[in-house]
Image 1 (cartoon, rainbow, N blue to C red):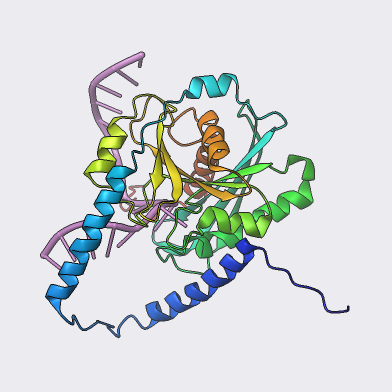
Image 2: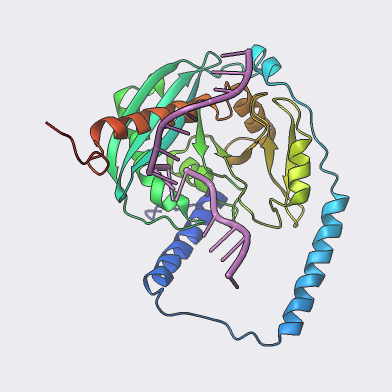
Length: 302
DNA sequence: GCGACAG
DNA sequence: ATCTTGTCGC
C-alpha cells in the first residue's frame, strides 16, 4: 500500500490529546476577561459531595501504608548498577527578569558514574507559548528538542542515554508531563525530577505528606506517591543527607520508576541531581553575563 | 478572601 | 522562573 501507515504509540496519542487541551487552555486564557462562573446550584449538595469524597479519599489513603523505603545514595554511587550507562543528560531554561519571551536553554551531558561534564551548550531562544500551569512542556520543550538535534548533528557519540528533566513525568494532571513530552519528541529515555509536589490525583502537601517527609532520615530514603486512583505516580526521594526537602521523581519515558529513582539518587551530590544542576548553573550564568542589569545600577558617578 | 500554580 | 546578603557551618 502506498499510504504510509501512521501508527500512533499510546504515548503519541496522549501527546495529541494534550495538544488539543493546550490550545483550548490558551483560548480560554486569551478571553480571560469573560468570567465563566458556574451557578452554585445547591451549596449544601456540593458541600456534602465534597465531604463524602474527602472521607472516602482519607480512608483509602490510610489503607495505603506507603511506608518509607530506606535507601543509600552513597551505596548507589559506589555501585550504581547500571552497566553500560555512560552518559546522562540534563536540561534547563533560565529566564531574564522582566522578559517572558527570551530565555537561555542549556543542555549538558555528564559522564556516568563519574558525573563530569563532557558536553555543554547554552543557546538563547525565543519562547512562543506562555507558562500555563499543567502545560509547562509546551513552553519549554521545543527549544530543548532543538538542542538535542544540534547535539545529534554535532557529535552523536556524546548523545545522552537518558535525560533528567526538571518537571514531572506521569505525575501530572493528564498523566503526561514535561518529561513524557520531551521523551516522546526525542525518543530518549527521560526522568521527571520536580522540586515541588504537583498536587494531583489526591496527592497533597498536607500534614500527612509532611509527616512522611519527616520520616526520611538519610539520603536515599523515599516513599511512594500513590494517587487516590491507586496508581503509583512517582516517589518522593530524599536525594542527599544535607537537604531534608525531598525531590519528586516520576517516570518520563522508556524507564521504570525503580530505575529512575536509583539513577537520580546516584546522580546527587546535592539536592538537585548533577545533570540538571549543571544545566541550571550554566544557563543562569549565561544570562547573568550577557544581560547586564541596567535596571538596578542607576547612579554610577563618573 | 484563600489556596494552587511542575518551571 | 525571578526578586536577593549575609551568614552559619564544615
